[in-house]
Length: 329
Length: 297
Image (cartoon, rainbow over all chains, first blue to last red; front, side, top):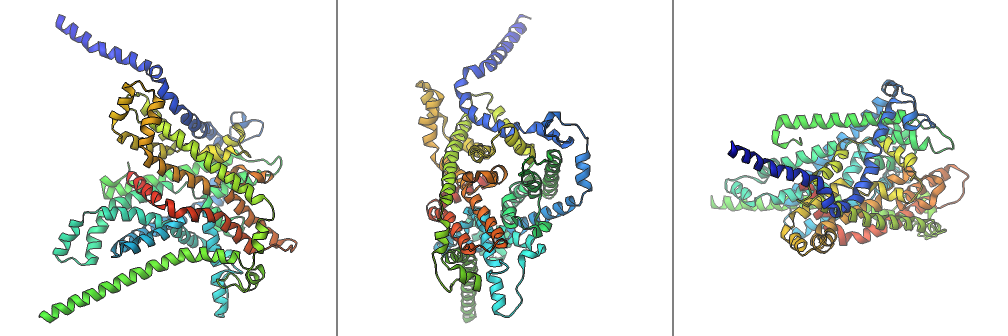
């Protein structure tokens, strides 16, 4: 008994000390924690303070009521949006533009990385890489204007060539259906150098002896690419794919808005949730005493979040079925 | 038999050289798709407006002219925009790198029990956030930051991704360095600024460059929070966007003579200039940073 008791006591003592230690932690190391405080405080303001605002999705927003005083309306905001004409158009636009971006972007980056790696001249490789990487530094607006040089209805290079050859100019900015494809091309133009570098780094990391062995066995260049390089690149490609699916619903506003501006003709195919919300919230609210329907807008924002979750879970599940180890979660 | 092998290796060499030439051709084509539009925009900015209106954008303008630049510099507005962008970039980058490094330092210390709590606190909003509109509403109606310089800086100040990148690098620094300093009686402030920070220059430089580029090119916050009564707060990119809009609406208006097309290109060249100048010196750090980030996911 005695032995057991002492064992118990021994067992408990460090535990107690641990608990007291934990409680004192903040005080003992306050000099450390205070260093993280500014970042944590700013982060709290912009990432946590907005959270209660989510309930606006279930309210009819009034200026006097604000977030907490406005009357509840249940799912009315969602009902209005889901039965309206815009939801299908916007969802379709998002899927077309991002699907195109991901597929064309991935294929061109991987192909570019493999091809540039085939070049014997290291100097040429460097020069091409550096030039292709340059658009990464350009804002979306510059990209939009570069494409305008090409496509401008009246003064663009393409229409200039068409006119000289006696053909009818194409009124690009009047036809919405050209634009999803132009956006995908522009996005690839801006992102090629970036993607190429990520994949090239992975290709260079592949052990050279694998290729040597293959060459001794008589593998051709093409066989080496399709049987060695691509299979070994698969984890990186899948990871980048999943990450870009996760990014679908953030950060496209500037790109789309740069191309679309206030050209209402392009709204049919280029409107995404963020541009739609911008028009309904910021543009609508810029007049004096203009009423902004924050309730409706928050509901639409929630739809965006939900859609994002569905897409990333679907993509991840598909990857998981094919190869368990490559899934994100 | 012998001759056959020789001719087949010959053939192999030939097809190999052809392949190389084709790849070079492809990349030269791709590179010219990037360089030519830049060149064209510069040429158009030095063309006379009349020749653009008559012949369209051209690499060989009918008449050269400086009228576009005279128009762009007719008042101080572009210098104001430059000032805003420079201030936002410098102040934002400095604050962001400092606060993120300090926070990364704290959550990299193994003896701090609540470090994982802070990490979770930073990580959760990257998965579930309030969404765009509550965010907008909070900044505008709760914090009252619209139409201030701070709204261009603060919302993007703290990046979870950057903090984790910094923390991972700090974790890789042998703990004997900081322990030695702590035994000597150095406080956390001293340990950070005298020991950790100087040893972590590569990651600091990488994060700094990405943050600076982000601030320089950003105009999201300006579009959402700065209205037309506060033109003096327009950052460069938003100024450029507004110039484009103004030109577009001016063309439908009274027929007032402004060098629209060339003027826009001149504005663009003035905003693009610094990036192209700095590019050769910083691009290799960006490429390295990209690879670090890409591997970490």
